[in-house]
Length: 240
Image (cartoon, rainbow, N blue to C red; front, side):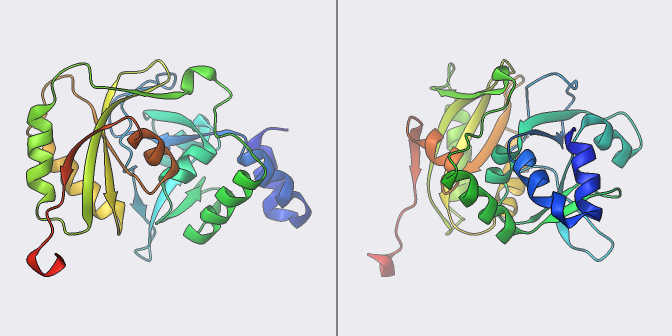
């Protein structure tokens, strides 16, 4: 039985919810991409993720059990990215996430996502896609990114909630390498990453793909271990 069928059963039969959840956290899910990607490509996904609002104004991140469910949500052909569910949950711990919105679906609150991550950790479930080509790897940037580091540093000088920033090159599977900025920060990542992404869009060069993540998240913590530290917030006089 696939994930779509398990979800349908879990909605109407509470006894099936445990099986659905155990299957979900071991499965791949689909996200909406801002950039042009084919269904099979593992490339430029923005780690601040795509958000939307329900009729009541609540912000959530849509994700889907299948590519077909994603198409059904938007009513047209769209570009997407496939990622392991636990990796997705680790990237989004502040807003709610809604599985298969506008259909048979389920909302995951911020607290529920954190609980699921803790359960998966206790059960030693590895957040690795069944498709081995979807693994995430990090390495030093293969070209100079001084123009980006300078711009990020200037932007972060006005952000008191960011203590430091590092940069590395990230590759998701066999996709296009991305320049990943890892920020040691507090507060809502979406409120920082979106304006930072817009600010850098006028500075980045052709062919440069940018992503952002907090070092508080496990993937970000892992990425920061070998990343180049280039920005440290200067303490104000009253902090010394």
